[in-house]
Length: 520
Image 1 (cartoon, rainbow, N blue to C red):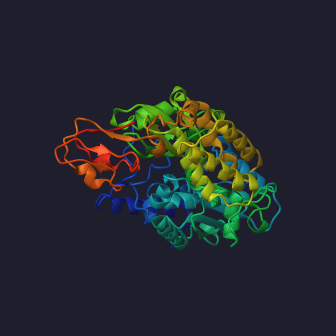
Image 2 (image 1 turned 90 degrees about the vertical axis):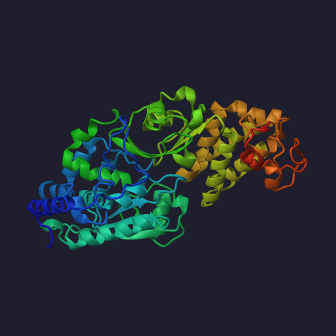
Image 3 (image 1 turned 180 degrees about the vertical axis):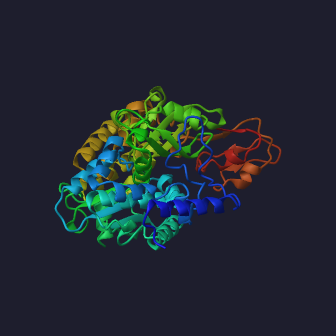
């Protein structure tokens, strides 16, 4: 039977709670570990608690109560005002006030408007949005309907990458279940408001995370960005007013309407309200998905939430914001984790990727790694990004290969400035961030590579060599595993590495059980 009143939702809630009391515990979500004392779970509060494939279990946690409140008790303008008061900023990277977008779209005179959920999470190692879609899909769906109601959209699209098959399956099921209960489709909750959602699967192009490229992909065109203005809120999908919010932004909406704008605004900072989910990766004790209040310091995240650097090594840098983010050194760990503070350091919040690096990381190689990714994912539409990122990558590859030249650092800085100023979309505009921040904070490493032909972190293969110590017992394990046959020696006698044959692959070091091999 379709749900038409608050009482209907309450009845389903009571039945679902009774059923939950007798069911076996749900399997633990591996990537979402128990929270530390510095974390606050809002977006992740239901993940691992509810059955994501059962809409009734979501309703048991007051699911769709916010939708009923919006449609039955509030005008579209009141919904916008409530979210504006909460201070919610878009969690997709730029941090633009979410309800401001809705306000712009609401002001447009159009018979057709669209609501899009951007689930094209492309940052390497990031899985915040995937986890929410897999474990709490109805929160995103409920947020979409409320957002659509606020500015007059009656059709929504979810753009999700094909690499997320479980998320796609569960969101598709969520759409079906919501339709069956009358929480999606025609005359939702008897309010006279119609809204439906379709799923669109992306092929994995990183640039399609940019909103205009995403819309082009939905329209069946090549995923390339276009100049703005006009902005999507004025002329977006098929030329109609369109709002694009990401998964986490939309999942916040039901919480705000249920608990009030004031509740949400108590968390975070004056300009960055609420909590934020992050993927912790790299050289820390505890990796995985976390949710912390905005404004927490980077140092608290690394040492309190993540448990510090593993293996007893020293902290070196943290990169925020994925491939287009900046690398932040140790002396800036007191920086608050919010939009303005990160921007002032030449980094970004991004969708929420945090990569922590220890003393064994080469910052030149890190810059090369991220530029390789960005260059490969550039759509090629604009020259500064297409050509500029290729030139930067070539310089970085030369430096890491021991072929750096005087003036390379200055050339990297000049190219970065041109790309930043001339690129069409956020991919190109953010591409220089890893370069500029590593040059600024780790310039000595660049100079060591170029002028001394050495890699201080002993990572770049062309700038290091391996040597066997006199303590070698002659077990011959390294010789048997050397792919280039560079190691010679008799059994039970000290072995020797031929530098002309050695490829600096490091296999010998990894298989030696006697600490008889060193990197120089």
